[in-house]
Image (cartoon, rainbow, N blue to C red; front, side, top):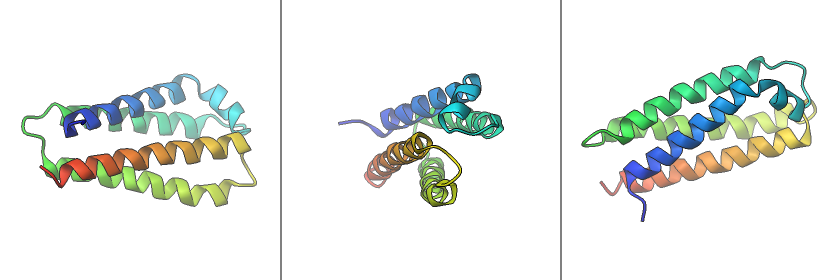
Length: 123
């Protein structure tokens, strides 16, 4: 089974890579979402890179701080909540592909939050 440290590393890697892709390929992302502006993708990408750096730092702490992991879990939960709320709000303004990406990423983040929480309560 995965350790809490490894789950945090997976979260950091997936968040960091997604963030880098959003920053580097913001024009492509805007096209996928059928919107004219790249700014939200760049801002989200920068946030994800910073978040990933925080998470990877926590993954290598000895011992891992339960308080810091709880913050990470809450950030993940807020991401999922924001995603769920954004789907009906953006339904008529972005592409179906964009909506699918939002839901798929929210599902992945929810899985990360669940796995981190599961391991945290067993520390």
